[in-house]
Length: 356
Image: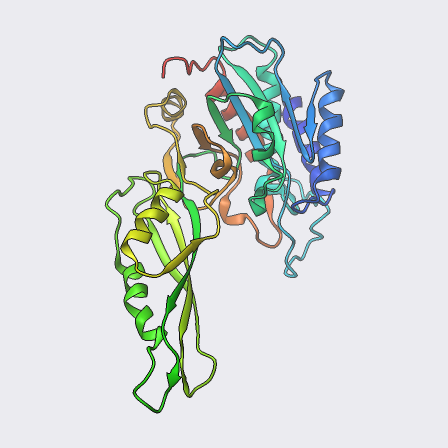
């Protein structure tokens, strides 16, 4: 592992993060750590709620702005943990603990890259943000500080991707549906069975394919994940309720897709939210081109992240492995943090995004 002091400091910061419980909406203590850590280097962080950010000196409206963002919150630990989840266990080559992989390693690696990049002149403004409520897609997270950050031209979202480039990420929309019938006695030929009326609707969701299909994310995927109807065996049900999980590719905005679905389906539909849109970065973007020159791969991510709340061009990339996220005894290799810092620097140092 590199003896770079920035990397060593990042590992120690990660240990403090792990040892400080930061469940979603309860990130205050770890936000305090980051605020004081940034101040210790003579930086001037800003804070709103449990979100902390800092801008490079000499911010200029003449330059584009790049945001380096990752999240401070974690999911709740499961009962399957063998190691204490809120202790940074260090067997030598890795750090074991809740949030070490998702997304503590990305937070500290992005911060180390920010500290190095801000020491020299860059053709862009740079902002580092450590934000809250990512795991619950909460309104008190990165979305709550966008006005204070100002216009952003490119967002680097730190999540465990094995430092490969997630150039597209699926959006998520949950739809509740209701098909009406008419009640009657099950023993007589009366009423209108809402379950039977719902069958062609459910079949439509199972089989319909939207025309726009993505190279990286494939087609829009709709899955009926719940059906509820009926109250007792001898009553023809007058309503059938269902819910649909919709994973959206980058060719559709959630609200647009919902309107298209409503035109195709003759029943009552209600989307729970339009917030979690798909996101992408053009494959000819200078960041992607440089990544390919460094030997990185492009792929589409099926999991949602803060990208869904960022209304500008973003790419998801960070140290660690998504397969370890939300698992018992989650861990990050120390060498992954070192590699993450190094790759972030190679990707961003001197990057000219004015050419897009």
